[in-house]
Amino acid sequence: MDLCRFKSGSSTEEKKKDTSNLSARLPTQIAARNPAAQVSRRRLLQDSNLAAPPFANAPLPPSVPVPSTGSGSFSAFSPKAPAPAVNPPVTPPKSPDTPSEAGSTRSMKWLYAILIPSIALLLIIIACMLLLCRNKSVATIGPWKTGLSGQLQKAFVTGVPKLQRSELEGACEDFSNIVATYPHYTVYKGTLSSGVEIAVVSTVLASSKDWSKHSEGRFRKKIDSLSRINHKNFINLLGYCEEEEPFMRMMVLEYAANGTLYEHLHVEGFDHIDWNGRMRIIMGVAYCMQYMHELKPCITHSELQSSAILLSEDGAAKIADMSVWQEVISKEKMPKNDDASEHHEPVRADPAGNVCSFGLLMLEIMSGKPPDSEHEGSLANLAMECIKDDRSISCLLDPTLTTHKENDLDIICELIEDCIQSDPKKRPSMREVTTKLREVLAISPEAATPRLSPLWWAELEILSVES
Image (cartoon, rainbow, N blue to C red):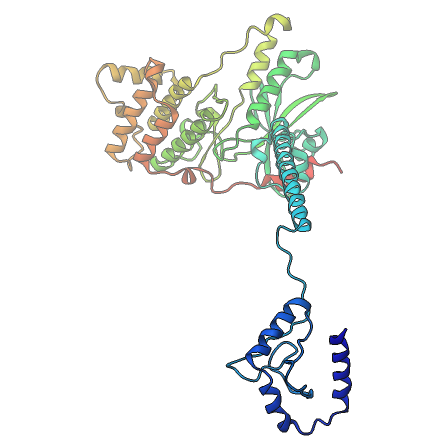
């Protein structure tokens, strides 16, 4: 109570005093601050947070407004004995161990413990769903993997497009533009409005009564296998057509405008092919056959011969596969018992058989002789006779070929002998054949493919999409 009255009276007196004699009162104020007073004030500060009174025996100095460099109630004048500062009450900072922060930390730990495993589980579930959907998805057909946009992607995502008779009838001039007629099928030439040419191949069967379940099965299997081939040295499948009234089974293929290899080698009136052109054809066929053999599952060619090799406008090889039409016709000549006929599937050529056929094709290209001749007999027999007599097959070389190198010819003849030997297990693979040929001829896959490829897919969009 005395301390409170002292402070109140001091405050009233401070208001009444004149503050103009500051210099006269400063020595008295400084003198009052002796060590004993300092100790007493420190103890009072520790007990009450109030300003300590002056020493008991010293007169009460009047208060004057002096600018302070300290931070409390007392000014600090001397650097040697600074006055203790009386700070306003400050709330001490909370330590990390306070109950509120400890509870918050525990809450965050529980949140992380629940949230992180939940996110991880969700990601695992999403990954499993994506993997399951991917395994069940339908694979995109090879020829349509690239170069498509818009309606084409929608039309071809499930497979080779099915075309209407009216679309093909308009392109082939009411099916009057016949390119070739064979015992099992007919080839029509079609021209799209942009000028791109297509080949339409149709069975000669004119009634659904002659088309058995086996015929339909072989037709669909061939469409499936051809749709998996996407190579520039192959006559790729563009679409198909099947209708019952009037009956029709057709395949739409790329068109090669330069005839067959057989015609250029053995028919008068066709352009002669020099050594370099023939070697380019050999390499194109080799690259394509290697590609087919390395597909999963492997695809072989049952009729690999010069009549199945078409030529593009710039003389590149384009392999065609028309074996399906012969298979469906041959089946019709057998008793029409679909259940029993399933056990009489045609023998499919294996990779080793394709290698032998490729060796004979190389021999035909190199020699210029037909596979069978009335005067000389079988070309394969001629080659075997040379081998038995320890003569090189190079003796069968076409005399019109004069620009070849003898060393290259010898290596090619040795490779032909390896391909046509009687033991299939001793024949090289198509990869080995291609590698050896490329080392000798130095023709890359790009050089063996057609340089002029018709952009049929741009116009096919108009034909395949319903208006």
